[in-house]
Image (cartoon, rainbow, N blue to C red; front, side):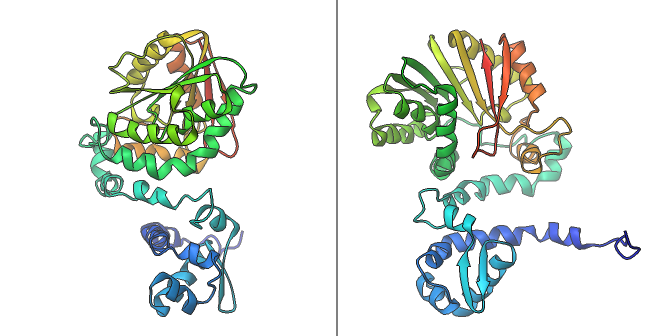
Length: 336
């Protein structure tokens, strides 16, 4: 390494404190439908401006910035979509994820980060209202995140019920959009799904069950997962992106209820952000702990060893770790 390369540089600091500009640029492009405009064949700043009802100067500057940060390509004065942008940010794509900004960049989420120093002092966001009953943010979350979760839901159903030819009773806790449970129902004509969530959120899962043609095998339980009666005899209980909101003792209380609701040989299926034991890798997963610090009183991203311990303390015999591409998160399968 040369002496010049070893010199201290403020570059990382300035990149970090201006990172909000990247978020706002992508948000603006989605709001203007810029990615779709380019996908439709509008490749110059002038053409993009007309399609997006924007100024040519504004379109040029935004497109250049998006090119610099990897969302667009540019040859001469012609802009194009990268492969990722074409798949995930062109509104015409079945894998479109642009709606995720409605939740991830919502005022509720950003407000927690504006008071991050206070959360660090307190060990969490003690004023977070996101976990209060029937908070409207979870309806927004369900609608925004559904397209992103659909491929993952299908991959989980394939792993857990590969033959899809036997009677199956599934409880989907914190069902949200309902896609995780519905993936079992659409694959297996003998699967019966029970979705549990706040009443306002369940309306969306009911809509999705009807659209999928499985409403006759989809029922709901409205209320708090910590308080309502689950019933019993479930072959599978789904816990997708739920445990990270709470501390280990609270999770173990919930998992004991899950264990009691499962039939003999039943499985709890958990989708989570699971960092390595060093808690700093992989970066996209380990960094979720900060999101929980800013947004919840005591949530965290738990390692596999920590999750395995919670399930063991709740009475489960063993837990297995599974990678499920294309998901960015692994799956934990815990056996009664």
